[in-house]
Image 1 (cartoon, rainbow, N blue to C red):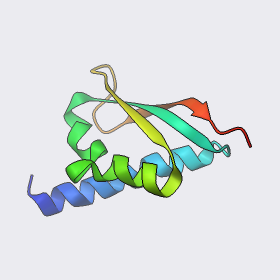
Image 2 (image 1 turned 60 degrees about the vertical axis):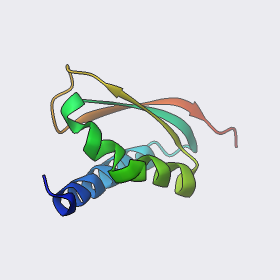
Image 3 (image 1 turned 180 degrees about the vertical axis):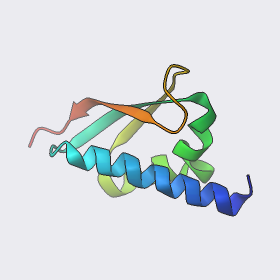
Image 4 (image 1 turned 90 degrees about the vertical axis):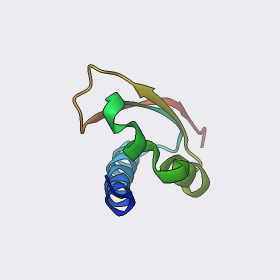
Length: 85
């Protein structure tokens, strides 16, 4: 995949993950994102951009777990830790 296509796909993943985190209505500190191994580059982002944005903009640490049982193109998020307050 060309870099521009990869960047677009990566942004789509970022938006989906961020929407899911926001839907919890709690101040999330750390999440575990389970994905199909084929999606790893798009989820993490170019030069880890998605992981970095979540940390810098929302103070959310991410733990990415590759799981072949997860259907390609989907993900599961588990909250590992929330902020008190």
